[in-house]
Every structure is written in structure tokens, then in C-alpha cells.
Image 1 (cartoon, rainbow, N blue to C red):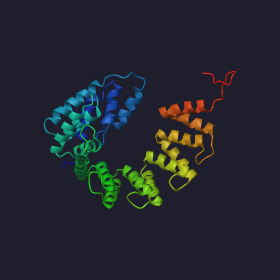
Image 2: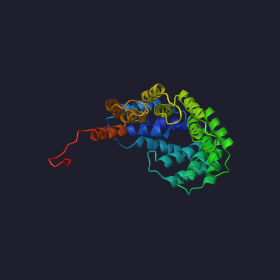
Image 3: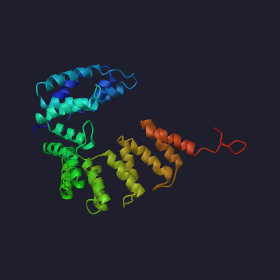
Image 4: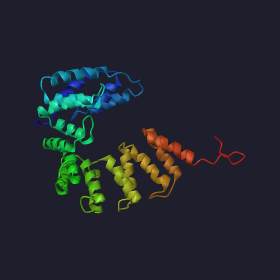
Length: 319
């Protein structure tokens, strides 16, 4: 297996789009997400600068794709993988899963570990190919051995349930722990769920919370919101309203939009806190201002659910 190095792909893309007047070019760069992308902050800044510009075609990104294709045709493993990814996600071109599979298979032959992992997920979910759990396990295992930490976590989860393999919860836990230690924070969330559920290992509430706190300590805003909600609502065997609200607010400060609606929902329903529709409204409004469509929908629902009854002369509702 070859080491993962996207520096050349990153350079090619930026050379083609750095002077683009299309917001879409920079949005596609963020979606494409080369490993250790050097220009992420600049791309984000350009997207914000052009927020009011009407969407247009990402013409310059197409030039980058042409260059990546030419490089792939020389047998470059990284370029082969990225052609698969471009087709799989429909980055600046029409999504083409059959082409994605073709490019990924070429990249696998060239020794690109991420191609094994991505194609493994295709076979696991039946995405673009016929679902095949055994083949998925084989490909994801190869990707994990090649250093793809998210694939290591996926293999760990498959070992827990016996999906495409013989169940081995002990080995599954080990692989999930290894994935977390190697930087894949979401493996900690998987471990927390495993211990909370107690299906494949003895139920252990304290260990489940410990894994969530480890994810929080890595700065993961999604886990901050999840753990915060658990602690306020007391749904997972531990209650700490003050800590829970603090974690939700920290997730909000980090830009995790769902935390706005979760916070508002606690006040709307009086879960773990005193019911307060005014506070709920304020959190929904803040979430909408931050870009949450969910908060806008909930704000409208809050208004209609709590408006004074408007009845006609015979007690009929007026519409």
C-alpha cells in the first residue's frame, strides 16, 4: 500500500481555481477536501466574500479535473483515487457511480488504500454496486491495513455485529480504540453507543460517558452537543444540567447548528430545565440567524402551536 499524500492534487486544484470569480469553484474545493489541504482557510474566505453573488458554473474546477485525469492516465495512484472520488461525489461534474467504481478499481490495483476503503463502503451499503457484506469487509480491512483510520473503525463495527464476517466483539473494540487513538474521533462515539446499548458487550454507563468525554476533549462539537443533551435530559443514566447546558453552548459557539434546535427543544418541552417558551424562541431565532433551516421551521411551529385560538361565531376555527 502507498502512503496517503494529496499535496500534488491540492496544488493542481488551487493553481486552476485560485483566481476564480465563481463561488462554486471554492465550494467544490471544500467538498473535495484533499488530505491536509493547504488552502482551506482561503477557500472559506472566498466563499464568504462571494456570498451575495448568484451561483454560476465552476468552470475553472473542470480544468483541474482535466489535469487530474491526465495524471491518472499515467497510472498515478493518488490521481486515480481522486478521479473515483470526483465521480462518486459529482464534484463539478455529473455524478457517475459506475465511473467511480472503475476509477477506484484502477486505484486499488495501483495500491491506493483509500480506494479500497471507499469501494468497501459502496459494497457495504449497496451504493452503485450490488450489496456484498463479505466483499465490503475484505475491502475495508485492506483499507484499514493501509492506514485509513475511518476504515479501521468501520471494520471494528462490522466485527461487533458479525456483518460480513464472524463476530468478534473483543477484536471490534480493539479496532475502534485504535481508530480513536489514531485520530478518528467518531470511533469514540461508536464505543460510547456500544457501551450504552450493552448488546455486544456488558452495558457500562460510566464507560459510555467516559468515551463521550474523551471525544469532547478532542474538541468535537457534535459530541459536545450530544453529550450536553444527554446530561440535561438524563436519558443515558447520568444527569448534570449545568454541565450539559455548558456543552451545548460550547457546541453552538463552534458552529454546530443542530445544537441550537436541541437547546431550544429542551426549553420548549421543559426537559431537564423549566419550560420556557420565550427562551426556546430566542434559541430558535439565534439558530435561524446562524443558518439553521430547522430552527426556522421550529420557530414557525412554535408560533402556530401557541397562538391564541381564533374562533368564528359558531366556535369554528377561522382559516
